[in-house]
Image (cartoon, rainbow, N blue to C red; front, side, top):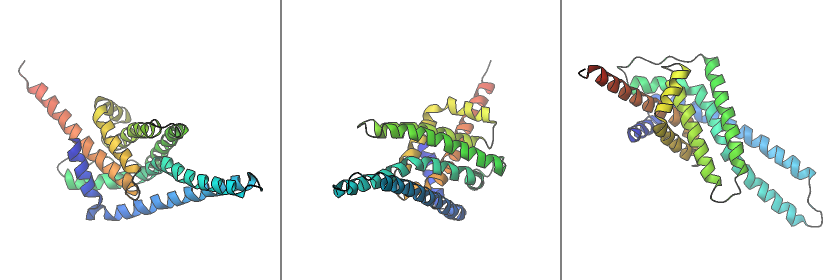
Length: 238
């Protein structure tokens, strides 16, 4: 089921129907990344300018600048899930509508979230992601633990939030959360795939579109399986 959903989502990311949304998503993601990069570089520049190590040892300042530059890249990687969350919340309904129309035309369409609610949900998702990744960043210098914590934390968070975004078009927040809990293993595995995409340069820009498409497919398949199981129980002889 998960393999099928991943393949279908990957195929649709570059489909003509999603191409316009993809370009807008890439532009918004790149703009937010650039904004964060400018803010971080100015923060680091201010810190280095006001905390010169020693005029007698300029090579130490050079080394500090190098370490700061590497730290910026690491910080950006840890902030990317939060940026992805904002973009995903903004384009959720556009992507979900395309996926539902193209691959599930016989099913009732989902209920679009009001724009204000979608943005607030995306901001909440981003806030949680930022908090989780700040905690993960604290163990960055512990070998063997750093990336494990990053992947596990983001697999759980991205799986949970993307799935509930997709399921929320058909269910109440409580029902969407309950469905996720009932299928926690599958949702976590899907989140692990999305988390893996986050750390791949260039491809990580596709995370919001791919994540939403993947979870729409996964939710549809899980809902169909649950319905089939329920029908089987009801039709079973007493």
